[in-house]
Image (cartoon, rainbow, N blue to C red):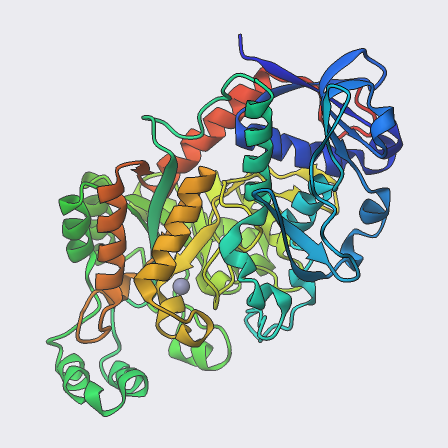
Length: 492
Ligand SMILES: [Zn+2]
């Protein structure tokens, strides 16, 4: 029988912010690996109390103080910096000092005076990103903001708070929670290859090479024009990854675009997954143990029917169910990303891996753990798992200005963060960048990172789908063993 933590939530909060608070606690407890039982605050003993003042908590072992003002004005808070206290890191908002976070003892309880539960909700629902300026694709620009100065995307503050809570519970003598990952591993890692331009347009691609590389691109541009260099590198990736004894996913665009559309603002890929060449490719990838996922087209988020049709087309062409998705250009609805996350559930994906900022490496929602996002409009948890992408290849090449410093150092620091938090290092390496002359150092950067991961041996490397399946099954086990923390406004 799995140990359940008894948690009480102040009825003064539960009535008004019940769904939001229950979701946040469910995220944290399941992320840590604890089952839970929600109990009334009046019950004599509980393990955790979340209350607006410590004296309301009775005999809880751990008391977290809630700040109703924060919940009332959730979207008003702006990031000013990062607070650090006794190994904890948390967002500091404009107008506050940020040094309110030291834990103290009260009788035989520990009291955490800062509302770190609100912090996790605020981070994981992306309250800050709604205000950042965006370009036409929805890419944010955080130049000059505290988020940039503090490198907040590298810190994964929300899962970091979860790890801090776990450490506190261990210090209080609670038994080890359910492990996050199988085979005794600390963290997980996976790669999905976006398949954007596997077939070059031989008169156009040379111009793109020259734009990227200047005059040093003359020879490779000529080679592409002559057909002796190309973008079709599936077998190269398969061989590279088989040598490392790892497997990955390839995400295919199921909607065939055109140059005309491209020029008119719909930059979809030009290939047809229904062609013989792709059907053969799908068989080959499946036989080698690689995952086939959807790379939702640029405007898929605009229509549930079109999005569902893309999934069906790819399933028919590949002869297998498609479980995972990543949006081309990370193109969720820029004005309302949650509307697109809801589509993932409606279309029936097990997981999506699109919550990252195009220009910046790191964890967009402060979570290095996989998670089921919260839908604020309906005040409930979504059913499609989010495996947040932590790094895309182009962030350290095309977007190098936003991700300065040594490439491997940056990537290893992200791996170290994921390992420290028991998180997942999910990355995006484009299929077409394998050729060293066309994309100098791109594939090599990935290979070196993967060699580093394989050599550490404490990271479980597998396809995104198998990582998602594992996390979903673990979550269901914890939920079945738990009671309460549901979206109803009063729980007990
Ligand atoms: Zn793409």
